[in-house]
Image 1 (spheres, one colour):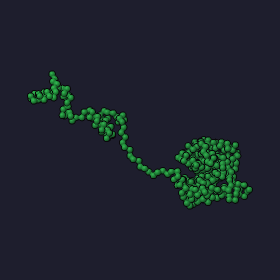
Image 2 (image 1 turned 180 degrees about the vertical axis):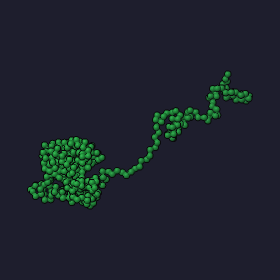
Image 3 (image 1 turned 90 degrees about the vertical axis):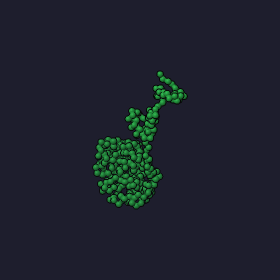
Image 4 (image 1 turned 45 degrees about the vertical axis):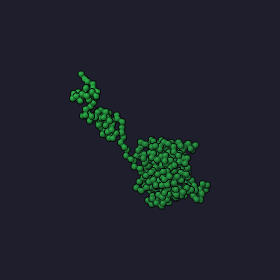
Amino acid sequence: MSLHLDERQRAMLAEMHIRVWPARSDATAAPSAKDAHTPTAATNASLTAQTQANHPATASADTMSQGGARPSDAPSHPSPQPMKSVGAPRPSATTAKATSDSPEGADGTTLQAQRDRVADLGWGALKVAVAECQACALGHTRSQVVWGQGANEPDPSGDDAAMAPAGVGVAQAEWLVVVAAPTAEDQIQGLPLVGDPGRLLDNILRAVGLKREGLGPLGHSVFITPALKCAPPQERNPQAAELDLCEPHLARQIALLRPKVIVAMGLLAAQSVLRQDAERIAGLPLGRLRQQVWQHQGIPVVVTYPSAYLMRNPADKAKAWADWCMARNLAMGQAG
């Protein structure tokens, strides 16, 4: 039999020295002193949550050992991210332009000065200016410049109305083919794209109905020129400053020739021709520039593989042929 005594009754019995054992339900309801120091399940959960908030990695491992939720199932607590170091700001378009216009050549010539120097030159005067150019260090290492080949140049001794005493004149060519830079062999001969790469180009021109000199079956003339007029020493790649300072020469050639179509052979040649699209094409590989019609001052531009590349990768000759067929269609369309 169990007695359910209140506190007053318990006190009275205690004064009478009568010991009363607590009922089972009371024992369960009132934890002993020992139990008071033992964490309950609720306390464990509270401690676990606090530990997890302070030490996510340790808490995850403890949770798994206790048979709780796996770390992938529990809410994530990302660790603090390290601060990113702040580098120098990237140059703006104005800064980039100012850099390109600053002295870069051996004689301190700026890009703008180079443009001003050739802006009003005719074909013959431009050819002389290119031969005498010392704007970059290549002026001291070259044996001769590689001007180009193929156009019907104006005759200074004739009565050409377009030829003025100051050398203002234009050449004639329906096609302009631009390569990147002369090789050592090109420099020796003073002609663009000779040797085996040149022979491959000659075969392509023949297939299209063109030839280097004079008129081919298509009835169009061709002018072939490098974007960089001097051969870099040791067959190294052209440097950006060299191409920058030579770009006004190429731009003036195009302005005087006014071809029906321009074929840029290779990435560097394409970048030199498409200077007005520099931001648009920056970082694009050659494959992304192909099979599109670009523009240079209203003249269609087709980008294709250089012949030296095709000699190493003959499987891409079919792609190159598609580019040349596109150029032919453009030239024929403008010819009417």
